[in-house]
Image (tube, rainbow, N blue to C red; front, side, top):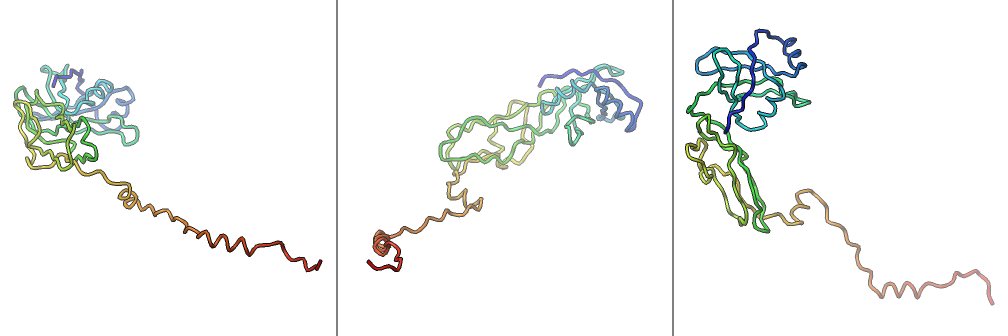
Length: 220
C-alpha cells in the first residue's frame, strides 16, 4: 500500500472550543502515539485526511513534524453522528518492516450458478502484515459457484508476507439455495389470495328460469 503524505501541524491548545475552531477552519485534531513515545497532539488538513481515510488501513506519512516525518496507521476515527464529518483521529506510530495485525476487506466478484444465492458471513478478515505492505482487500471470484460451495478464511489467496490471524475455519461465504416465491411469501407473512368458489352452470340456469316480470296484480 503506498504512503499517503499529509502535512501535520503540532498543536498545544486543547478543549472543545479549540477543537470547534479547528474544524471551522477545515482542519481536524488528531493524536499520534506508539513505540513508547509520548502522545503527540496534531492538526491535519480536513479534506486531505478525508480522502486518505477512504482507503482502509491507509498508511499515512505525517510530514512537517519536529524531527522529521512519521509513518502511522489510523487506529480510531471519530465522526459526526449526523453529517459524517471526521472530528478526531487517533494514529498509531509504525516503522518500516514492522508487522501489524489489521482487518482487511473481503470483496466478492462474479455471479453464482443460477438457482443459488450468495451468503457472505465475513466482510473483513484479520491478518498480520508488514505495516508498509498491507493488502487493500482480498478478492473472491464466485463465478459459477454451485449450491453448497463454501469459502473459509484459509481459502483466501494471501500475498507473500501476509499471514492469517483469524480462525482458519471461519466461514467467509457460501452458496445456498435461493428461496422460492412461496418461501418468501411465508417469511414475509403474506396471506394466500382467496379464490372465489366456482359457481356451477346449473345453478345459474335455475336462477334464470325462476326469474320473470314482476306481478303487478292485474289480470288480462
